[in-house]
Image (cartoon, rainbow, N blue to C red; front, side, top):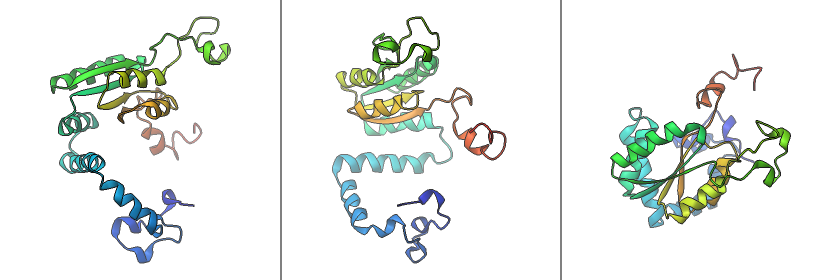
Length: 205
């Protein structure tokens, strides 16, 4: 079992294999070599190298929004998909407008697409935000299929719920990146809870 999250050595970063733990992934040489071959595939190599060069060029200078737009431009994408939460409609509009300003066509799909009531897929009525009423469910699978239908080259998520984002990624035919992850409590900054895990948020996690 690999436990990188609890490692204090990080031999992988400093190229010091003599110091690596017994369960360090570096020891799995066969798998490491197998993965290196994957990076050699032309379509994967271009995608990875472009993102890595982008990391260098914008390091500690560009916000993720600029990184995302710049990545799309450098990859030469002409049509990009935007899968967003209806609660972040204003944010999605800003992102879409910025992409268009940079010459990129944007296909957007809101989470409530399909207008399917939550009860139709087995969500109990008492788990609706407003029980006893029609309440449209989030529909990440449809969002993915709508963007697939339009043959988007790259998809961006904006504020999809935990789990819903996973389903979107699973069904998306194009590569996916997350621009905003939802956290209604912390202004969509989930890292805030991590930084305060031993302090203000200790009794809330």
